[in-house]
Length: 162
Image (tube, rainbow, N blue to C red):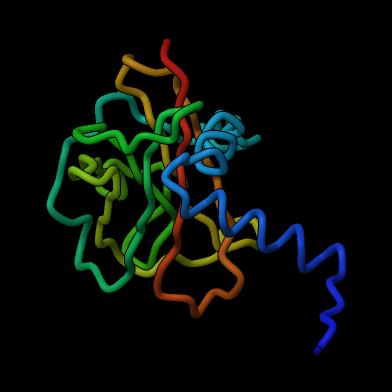
């Protein structure tokens, strides 16, 4: 007869996997309840222009701003939400009207907008994004790129009703 030795880690991992796949959805429910709203970032509203037009692309393109929008608490994707994007790029400064544009989230809450390459401003390559449609609390983000040569930047919003 072969004796098996079970560590506490193996038992906990097995139990967690069993709960996750059991149809009870306990882990999913706990994770969703823990989904906190995204706080506004310092400097995120710099050079913000209310009501920027919804566009197919900002300028000549070549750089992709992507992300998701979900509801706080249950994590449900939010379709049809307006996300405004602006940045200091190879084609203009973040204060220039032609450097601003907005897009809408699709059915799974994701958004994607092509724009010119972001370049460093104040020593950091960064973008600006805003949720400002009114149904949820306004959130401004200012994510910083890891490298000025990156050709995309991703930002996620978790929103709480206004």
